[in-house]
Structure formats: structure tokens, C-alpha cells
Length: 139
Image 1 (tube, rainbow, N blue to C red):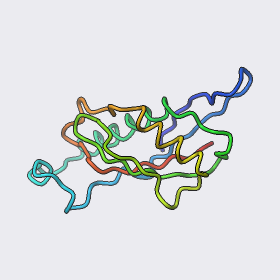
Image 2: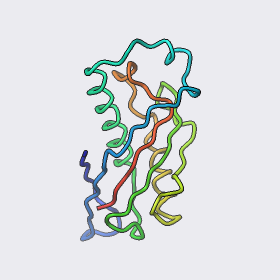
Image 3: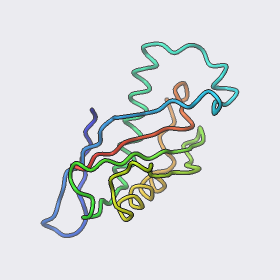
Image 4: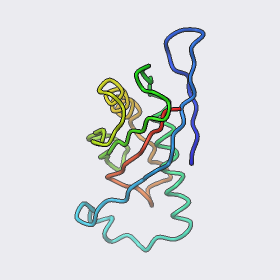
């Protein structure tokens, strides 16, 4: 589990810690793989560690840009699916149907992903994932 903290905006005395759980960095389905991804060499344990660091870097970047609304209650979870280019440019982001956030919370998280672009990519080329899913847990 990865923890990231930031302050919620809303007043000088108001602050809230956000925890981001590493529930999933989903690898793309075989049909969604690019030619470069299909011809990539087999993954190693070093790649697994790099993949974890890649997901952590993306999650941290998104959290820096997330202004959590008061309607998002502690313990609520929301998964977002992100479609990106190797440069970290976000093509699309969508909250998943099982997201527990209300409409304002979903929009705020999707907007945070867009504001966070370009997502981290340098040094992670070997483990780049075009389609990924991240789950955020408010705390």
C-alpha cells in the first residue's frame, strides 16, 4: 500500500490526509498491446519493482493535483481508467462504475489526472502501460 498526503483546500484550519491505495496498476489486455509492447522481452523481478515505482509516481503526481471535495468521505474508493501515450499525455480518463465518489468527486479526480499530465514517463519506458487503472481511497 502506498501513502501520499496532501492538504485539502477550503480554509486555513481545514486539512485532511488522503491515502492512496495501490489496488491496481492493470496491464493492458493482449488486444490493446502496441507492436512495441508485443515484441517486448519477458518481464523480470527488476521490472516488477520498476512497475511498482511507475504506478507510485503516477499516483503521487495525480494526488498533487487533486482538490478533494468535502463530499468525498473517508474510506470511499474510486478507480479511474487512464489511457495515455508513452510521453505521459493523457488521452482519456474515466471513473469506473464501481466508484463510490459522488459526481463532484468523480469529476474532481478525473480533472486531477488531466492536470497532472504529462504523467511520469522518463525512466519508466521499459514498463510503460498504455491502459492503466488506479484506485484512490479517501482517508
